[in-house]
Image (cartoon, rainbow, N blue to C red; front, side, top):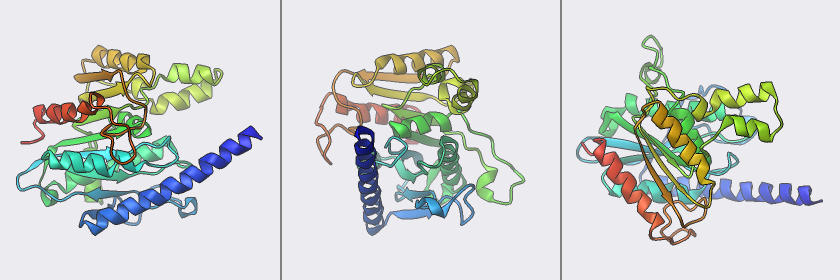
Length: 295
């Protein structure tokens, strides 16, 4: 009975979050923000029976001078996507002078590999259209919260240089982000995840195939890591240690206060007001500026 109640709760929650997400996209469109499909009617693995939109981007207006772009991936346990981790964050960083975009990536029953493909395509799309949006093509960041943070780690470790012979011009350019922001993301350890499920070699290989910590390389972009003690701090500390082993630059901010899933922590849009933790966004903006994202 308890399992049935839990399933019903998550079903209702998912429906509510899907509705609020679509309302957000309608609001963005009413503000004149461009909504673009990541694939022109030919999205790999897309199944309309799942009841989800084809992967898309809400692309904010260009600034007067060329600047870097920040693609934002909201979290939601890979079941839905949360409004408070999308539009308010995109607005904040756009007002700081960066170009911003919000990705509407695929969630369950799609796999992490499907979501990662969406994230990589978003990086490619903006790079291929850098002139249109007045973006610096070598300054495209990808960042996300919770499950969107996991997606960030996957995009930052599963990129490729593009196929120069591809018929689709978007596929000709690199999908490597120039910076990755994991914001209370799931800083995974594939070994512990597998052992929690009972050791299964096939499951271990499946987890390791997408695991950011199992796919790091010296070519990965710099990382900005943010978490609070509401999550197990050993996870982000362990990931930072792995980054240091590969010589990958990173900034690490571990805050004491604030619950998981609170976005900007500024007391708006039904999130906690935690002034000290809210400073993460200013720190992230400074970090991106230091990487040359404001030109």
